[in-house]
Amino acid sequence: MPLTHQLITLEAAGLIRLAPNLPEVEYLFRHALLQDSAYGSLLKADRKHLHAVVGEVLEQLYDDHLAELAPVLAHHFALGGDETRALGYYAEAGASATQHHAIPEAVAHYTHAVALARKTNSPQLGELSLKLGRALEVNSQHTTALQIYTELTAFARERGERAVELSALVAHATLYATPSSVHNPSHAQELAEQALALARDLNDAAAQAKVFWVLSWLNLIQNHMNQGAQYGEQSLAITREFHLTEQRAFTLNDLGRVYVYLGRMAEGQAALTEAAQLWRDFNNLPMLADNLTARAYTHFLVAEYDDALHISDEAYAVSVSTGNVWSQASCRLNLSYIYFEQGDLARAIEMMNDLIATGSAVGYPGAPLTQLDLGWMLAWLGSPEQGLALARESYATAEKFSFARLWLLAVWARILILNQRLPEAEEVVEKARAIYSPEGPLLISILFPFAECELALAQGEAARALTLTSDFIQYLQRVGKHFFLPQALYLKSRAELALHQSEAAHATLHTVRALAEAHGSRRMQWLALSALSQIARDHGEAEATRALSEQARSHLEYLAAHCPTPDLRESLLNLPEARAVLEAV
Image (cartoon, rainbow, N blue to C red; front, side, top):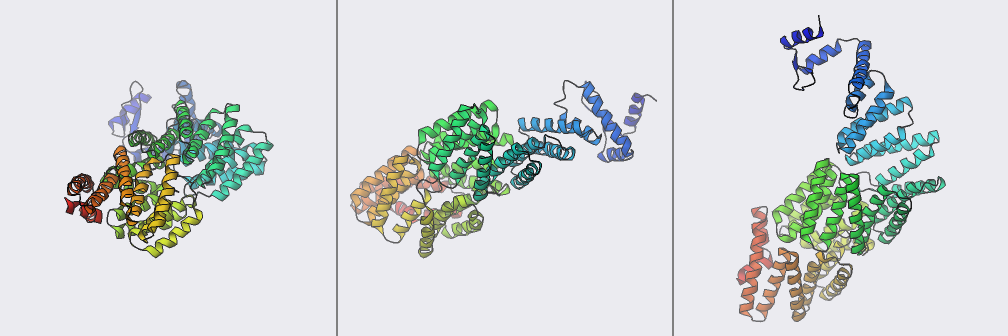
């Protein structure tokens, strides 16, 4: 019976159906169980032969579409026993999936390719293992990637393949240097030093540039900013000399961060902007998202909120398009602080909760740290016990990230201060002081001076608080970190008021008000106006008191209206500063 009649008979019996895939004719089984049963009825030798034949036929019929059919061809040749061709098609399928940002598919294809490369002792094993490891990293499977690099290093040493060993060492060191569930700075340093020695021995300029980049990033993470800049500049010089364009993009991306942390804002922006164009040229969307997040951060630091929000939104869209959950979490971090300052409290807290949930699922270190920050926000909003409980949940998790220990201690101390647990806060501040450096990354090192100043005020040491805040403000002005200025100046005004320096406090608060208005910070405008109205009341200036209180109330009501829950709204309105405004009006 001709094949056409057989197909018609099977279709009439309800076993198969014609797929809507014209002009090509394709039939599908009505149910997967039917397909499994039919497939299982074949002898193994017959199945193997049929897979091989199907692969051959597909190659002949669609020789101009082999790239598109690579996953199908890899499958048939693997089951048909042609491991060499299967390996080639799995590698091609992995590359195509990576190019189209289908990372889970890339992981699957490269996993098959690596398995076949090991089985056939293919010279492609090193290259494919590195590609698989990178895909696993992008897919947030850091532990599995670590295993791949470890196995590749051992394999290369056993075979005496020094170039492969060098590539494995660099990848291994890079992963250990990255803040993730496997972050280990000491291992990263050790492996990077081994890689650098081997790169010099092999006279491999590209590898040296990459190792210097890893060391730059590692020093950035460990708060050694000047050393990080030196390593980054060494890497950049090599990439320019030898025209290593892709590595130049990586180096610029992180060197830009180092410059920003050092207060060299113009150099930082220039480096990040150059890197962004390179990522666009390469169509490397995961790195473009990372770059955009870093650029948004620089705008956030100088209180250019509109630019920060716009760039962060683009970073988030790019991250979603690639399915990179880690990046999605990272690029939302600064936004929550901006929304909090602007008074959109519900949106800020919702974003933080989302970041905590998604970030925790992939081991993103910002997740437990964000939960700490959320705890502080809740405590500041008048719910200190709730904030303390939330922060305590994440303390143990956050503590394992050594690079952020100062952040952890500073935020924890600030929450303890808001809970009036001053002896405990003092112990935590002492621990933080031992590791504090003003050259550390902002939002890690910057929070310690706030904790130190707030503790001094809470302990009634106004003179010390004034000295601390004055020094802190000078530093912020010198390095151009304007986001934090209104908050630091407000603490200074509190110290001045405690020392009965009302004229100085009056002038400081007017500066706070002006900056907060320019930044769009309703939170700081409310605090400044509330304090100014209190000064006017103390001086018997009834009209000024009423006017300032009414302005303060408008911002307070905005904050209250944007609280996520009735309980938080009530706790906010019961804060002393809030009651003073409401009673004055």
